[in-house]
Image (tube, rainbow, N blue to C red; front, side, top):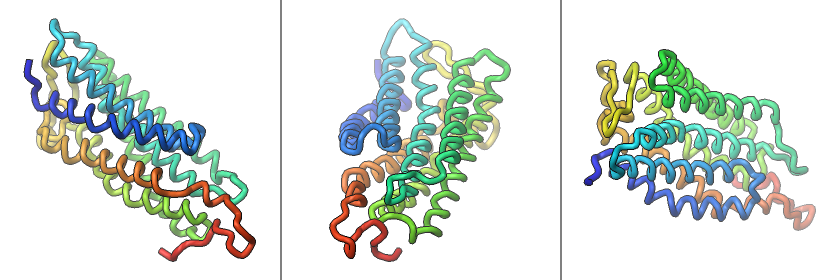
Length: 273
């Protein structure tokens, strides 16, 4: 059976995130899986690979297994959460002090809880297709994602305002985060528009039905225009991931702690930005 446009995009997602997973694992091994930013990036790549595989399988498997669609769509919609939380964890790394302490630990933990709550609401809202509260949960979840992004952007601005206290290579990591933030903004906006584009969606057999709300219908992740999904969702988040992969592969974050001599202590020394 031939794939439709959504199936083709799912297959493309599966293919392009396999190498991302390889590099993400290598970076996580380099810095240790205790470094949440890189570990969550590994999880994100796995979510994209599994989600793509489920959606491709959903179109190929006969008789139709509705659970494959629900699982694939749930992973697709919830993938924004690990991308935001990876960015959050990387931003926290830029607050690290020369003695290895991370600043604002309680605030970052609360923000991770916010992202987790948004993830749970999104998954439950998609999975409970017959529940009257499903749409409310999906919309509440995506609004929490939007709030988390705004806080992230403000946090990055605060770090720039305090750049004199940011260690040399972590300042370069802050640059990478700042480069990714505009693309992450478009990705987050797409999730909001997609979620508010319909009041319900039900996956039945090989089709997904949706009650679309006017002008926003074209942004619907499931039944909208695939070109918009490609440009605002798939491409935007892939650019973010490539920026982080490049940063993780090239930056020498461990060098911030290699004391060469007192006069050449590299912790806070870098070019002005």
